[in-house]
Image 1 (spheres, helix red, strand yellow):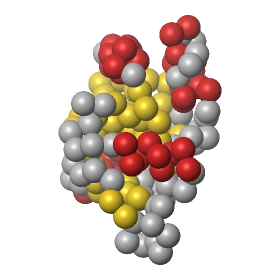
Image 2 (cartoon, helix red, strand yellow):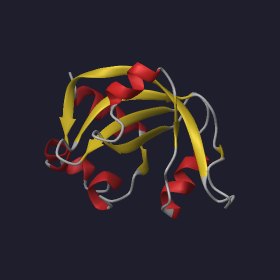
Image 3 (cartoon, rainbow, N blue to C red):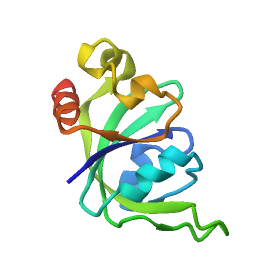
Image 4 (tube, rainbow, N blue to C red):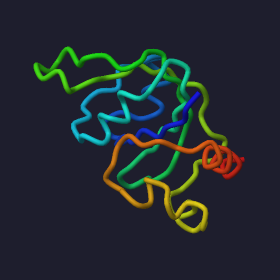
Length: 134
Protein backbone atom coordinates (compact mmCIF):
# COMPACT_ATOMS: atom_id res chain seq x y z
CA UNK A 1 0.00 0.00 0.00
CA UNK A 2 1.20 3.50 -0.85
CA UNK A 3 0.30 6.79 0.79
CA UNK A 4 -0.68 10.05 -0.87
CA UNK A 5 -1.94 13.55 -0.24
CA UNK A 6 -4.62 15.21 -2.37
CA UNK A 7 -5.22 18.93 -2.12
CA UNK A 8 -8.63 20.50 -2.58
CA UNK A 9 -10.14 23.91 -2.06
CA UNK A 10 -12.78 23.29 0.59
CA UNK A 11 -15.13 25.81 -1.02
CA UNK A 12 -15.01 23.72 -4.23
CA UNK A 13 -15.03 20.15 -2.82
CA UNK A 14 -14.42 19.47 0.86
CA UNK A 15 -13.88 16.34 2.91
CA UNK A 16 -17.45 16.83 4.12
CA UNK A 17 -18.61 16.65 0.50
CA UNK A 18 -16.71 13.36 0.09
CA UNK A 19 -18.37 11.98 3.24
CA UNK A 20 -21.79 13.02 1.93
CA UNK A 21 -21.15 11.56 -1.56
CA UNK A 22 -19.61 8.31 -0.18
CA UNK A 23 -17.41 8.09 -3.30
CA UNK A 24 -16.09 10.51 -5.91
CA UNK A 25 -14.03 10.77 -9.07
CA UNK A 26 -10.89 12.82 -8.40
CA UNK A 27 -10.52 14.90 -11.54
CA UNK A 28 -9.40 18.33 -12.78
CA UNK A 29 -5.70 17.53 -12.36
CA UNK A 30 -3.59 19.09 -15.12
CA UNK A 31 -0.03 19.34 -13.74
CA UNK A 32 2.26 16.70 -15.28
CA UNK A 33 3.85 15.69 -11.96
CA UNK A 34 0.44 15.46 -10.28
CA UNK A 35 -0.86 13.35 -13.19
CA UNK A 36 2.16 11.06 -12.88
CA UNK A 37 1.33 10.62 -9.18
CA UNK A 38 -2.33 9.88 -10.01
CA UNK A 39 -1.22 7.21 -12.50
CA UNK A 40 0.83 5.55 -9.75
CA UNK A 41 -2.15 5.19 -7.40
CA UNK A 42 -3.52 1.70 -6.82
CA UNK A 43 -6.72 0.38 -5.32
CA UNK A 44 -6.35 0.25 -1.53
CA UNK A 45 -3.82 3.09 -1.26
CA UNK A 46 -4.52 5.58 1.52
CA UNK A 47 -4.83 9.31 0.97
CA UNK A 48 -4.75 12.36 3.20
CA UNK A 49 -7.23 15.02 2.10
CA UNK A 50 -5.76 18.49 2.52
CA UNK A 51 -7.86 21.65 2.45
CA UNK A 52 -5.93 24.42 0.73
CA UNK A 53 -6.94 28.09 0.65
CA UNK A 54 -7.68 29.69 4.00
CA UNK A 55 -7.62 26.42 5.99
CA UNK A 56 -4.25 24.93 4.94
CA UNK A 57 -4.55 21.67 6.88
CA UNK A 58 -4.99 17.92 6.55
CA UNK A 59 -8.57 17.10 7.50
CA UNK A 60 -9.27 13.46 6.67
CA UNK A 61 -8.27 10.11 5.22
CA UNK A 62 -9.65 8.52 2.07
CA UNK A 63 -9.01 5.28 0.21
CA UNK A 64 -8.35 4.81 -3.50
CA UNK A 65 -11.02 2.45 -4.86
CA UNK A 66 -9.83 2.33 -8.48
CA UNK A 67 -6.54 2.70 -10.23
CA UNK A 68 -6.12 5.56 -12.67
CA UNK A 69 -8.25 5.54 -15.80
CA UNK A 70 -8.81 8.05 -18.64
CA UNK A 71 -10.81 11.16 -17.81
CA UNK A 72 -13.98 10.86 -19.89
CA UNK A 73 -14.40 14.65 -19.81
CA UNK A 74 -11.14 15.17 -21.74
CA UNK A 75 -10.11 14.23 -25.26
CA UNK A 76 -6.40 14.08 -24.39
CA UNK A 77 -5.49 10.62 -23.07
CA UNK A 78 -2.80 11.98 -20.74
CA UNK A 79 -5.55 13.18 -18.37
CA UNK A 80 -6.53 10.53 -15.82
CA UNK A 81 -8.75 10.27 -12.76
CA UNK A 82 -9.10 7.94 -9.78
CA UNK A 83 -12.07 7.03 -7.60
CA UNK A 84 -11.88 7.40 -3.85
CA UNK A 85 -14.05 7.02 -0.79
CA UNK A 86 -13.81 8.54 2.68
CA UNK A 87 -12.24 6.49 5.49
CA UNK A 88 -12.31 8.85 8.47
CA UNK A 89 -12.16 12.47 9.45
CA UNK A 90 -9.13 13.29 11.57
CA UNK A 91 -9.83 13.95 15.24
CA UNK A 92 -7.74 17.12 14.96
CA UNK A 93 -6.70 18.75 11.70
CA UNK A 94 -2.97 18.99 10.98
CA UNK A 95 -2.13 22.57 9.97
CA UNK A 96 0.54 23.31 7.39
CA UNK A 97 2.32 25.54 9.92
CA UNK A 98 2.76 22.54 12.26
CA UNK A 99 4.09 20.41 9.41
CA UNK A 100 6.58 23.10 8.37
CA UNK A 101 7.75 23.43 11.98
CA UNK A 102 9.07 19.84 12.01
CA UNK A 103 12.56 19.14 10.66
CA UNK A 104 11.50 15.76 9.30
CA UNK A 105 9.21 17.43 6.77
CA UNK A 106 11.76 19.67 5.04
CA UNK A 107 11.75 17.36 2.00
CA UNK A 108 7.99 16.74 2.03
CA UNK A 109 6.42 17.84 -1.27
CA UNK A 110 3.73 19.80 0.60
CA UNK A 111 6.52 22.01 1.99
CA UNK A 112 8.88 22.02 -1.02
CA UNK A 113 6.35 22.23 -3.88
CA UNK A 114 3.33 23.99 -2.38
CA UNK A 115 1.38 24.23 -5.65
CA UNK A 116 1.49 20.48 -6.35
CA UNK A 117 -2.00 19.02 -5.84
CA UNK A 118 -1.20 15.27 -5.79
CA UNK A 119 1.87 14.03 -3.95
CA UNK A 120 3.34 10.92 -2.36
CA UNK A 121 3.67 10.59 1.41
CA UNK A 122 6.31 8.23 2.83
CA UNK A 123 5.26 5.62 5.38
CA UNK A 124 7.22 7.48 8.07
CA UNK A 125 5.59 10.79 7.19
CA UNK A 126 2.16 9.14 7.20
CA UNK A 127 2.73 7.74 10.67
CA UNK A 128 3.98 11.08 12.01
CA UNK A 129 1.10 13.02 10.46
CA UNK A 130 -1.39 10.57 12.00
CA UNK A 131 0.20 11.04 15.41
CA UNK A 132 0.01 14.83 14.96
CA UNK A 133 -3.76 14.51 14.49
CA UNK A 134 -4.36 12.77 17.85
